[in-house]
Structure formats: C-alpha cells, structure tokens
Image 1 (tube, rainbow, N blue to C red):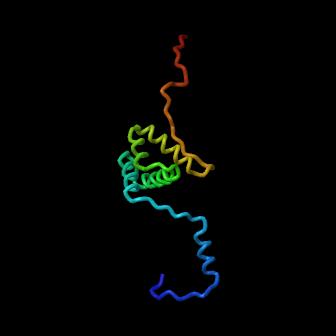
Image 2: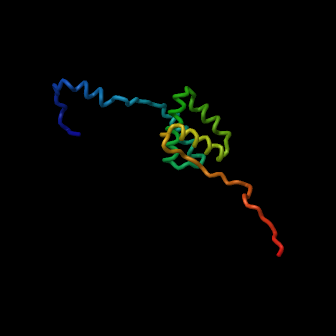
Image 3: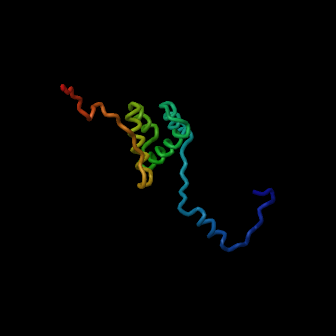
Length: 121
C-alpha cells in the first residue's frame, strides 16, 4: 500500500487481469446476527472459539445451499445431547471436506469382547 494517489494505468489487459483475479471466487455473505447466533450456540455447547467459528462457517454454508434458515437449524440441534451433536457435526464436516480424509470419533463399547472364565486346576 502506498500513500501516493493511484496512477491511471492505460494497460489494455487491466480488465482481463481483474476478471481472472476474481475467477472462481464466489462471494458469500451472511447476516451478522446469524453468524453470532451459530458461533454462540457452539461456544455454549463446549466448543472452543476457533472450533465454533469453523463449524459455524460450514453450517452457514450448508444452510445456504439447502435453503434452510440458520435459526431453524439451531433449533433442531438444541434437542441433541453432546454425543448426538458431535455425530451430526462430524457428518456435516465430513460432507464438506475433501474425500481424501475424514473425521471420526471413538465409541466405547459397553460389552467386553473377551470372555472371563474361572479355571480350576
């Protein structure tokens, strides 16, 4: 950046350069109250600030793709406990990730896989 005034560039390729600089960059915007509500929802559910922001970004994008209001989405997520919420968030994040990697979580089984026996000698 410079404090000097912009010089008039008579370059004939200026419009072409500007077009290709913005090629494949779709600008999306969301109302501030939607963003704050989604981030606040995840922070209140125990997510850290950075995790809440990244998760909220994905949910806002997905809500826009599906034409669902963000507040309706939050209302459906309010009834879930922490395990169910983690499952839903993991599924949504995996859906929006590249297919070369996925997120997962460990489920602890209630049942032991080994048998316990008393051996009498």
